Amino acid sequence: MSVSRKIKESIEKSSWIRKMFEEGAKRKAQFGADNVFDFSLGNPNLDPPPRFKEVLRELIESESKGVHGYMPNAGFPETRKAVAEYLTKHNNLELSADEVVMTVGAGGGLNVVLKTILDPGDEVIIPAPYFVEYNYYLDNHQGVPVIVKTNDDFSLDINAIEDAIGEKTKAVLINSPNNPTGNIYSEQELKELAELLETHSSKRSRPIFLISDEPYRKIVYDGINVPSVFNAYRNSFVVTSFSKDLSLPGERIGYTACSPEITDKELIIAGMVLSNRTLGYVNAPALMQRIVPHLLEYSVDISAYKRKRDMLCDALESFGYEFIKPQGAFYLFPMTPIEDDVRFVARLQEENILTVPGSGFGGPGHFRIAYCVDDKTIERSLPGFERAIKNIK
Image 1 (cartoon, rainbow, N blue to C red):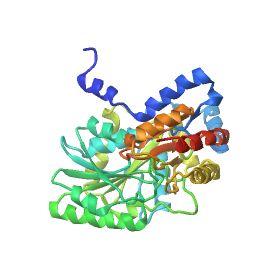
Image 2: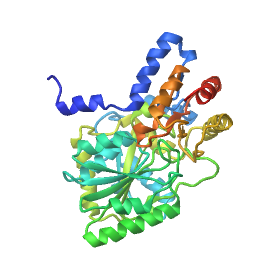
Image 3: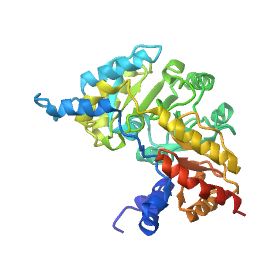
Image 4: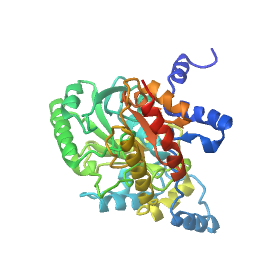
């Protein structure tokens, strides 16, 4: 066999998101791009803020030497310092550049953290629905996912998390605002989770870490606040990217930061820096690192995503779809009108509407709509959504 058995199995189980994206390409070739309504991939459709192009132009035209060379494996000191100052401003504790590692997006950051903390067979608890790529990241480092259900409103089920904690539990991995639900975990939920982890950490005389994946932190609606895990729990990591809030997914720039109060901080930091190098990332992209300090307080126009959310929610509710209105991110996760979510998604395909079954996110009986698309795509898809729910048996 030309590839490993493990990779062959992974290919066969490959992400529903990519499968639907590929289906979209086929249908666009067959029916025309304007007649296919692709909500399958969370690829931001908004342009980066104008300030991004201004800074990019300044950097490209700069005569400074060595701007494209290697830098310390943790990233440029001035960039890490700027990120630390930003995090200090938005948290109730002071971070330094030492606690920040610049990474190749949030995916790179999560792999850096997992490689740093996991021994073979260690377990990571993940509340579902969740971003299914986490399974692959854990497998990269011989970690084991332990999936627990959330409550009906997608809030954390603290009792379910406690029941899942075992001798091999090394961390809990959360994603807020959440992909695929758009839910934001409240300050009270984080407080209860922190108390639980502190109790079990004390019993074992070793920490259970909390990892918060936050690429959608700035994409929030209706004045809702995203609470800080750093303020809630000392043994925590924050991992994020600029893919969503600055619409830079292709530039692969992000960072991971550990709490300045984390257990064995010097060892943790050394582990993250080494992992960043030995995973093959070596450094996060140099040009993007130089841009980050200038754009930490910027984001795309969040009101545009809110408008898309409201347009879609108002219409689907009138058709009879049931869902919890998302508080953040740019996903809607409605219940399917029949139990078989894969079958209902296939019914939507007949209308040239491409969504993703909730089963692909550990949330069967739902489907995900990524509404980071043109307004026209939403508007023109609505008759098909209405026909699908009215003509399914």
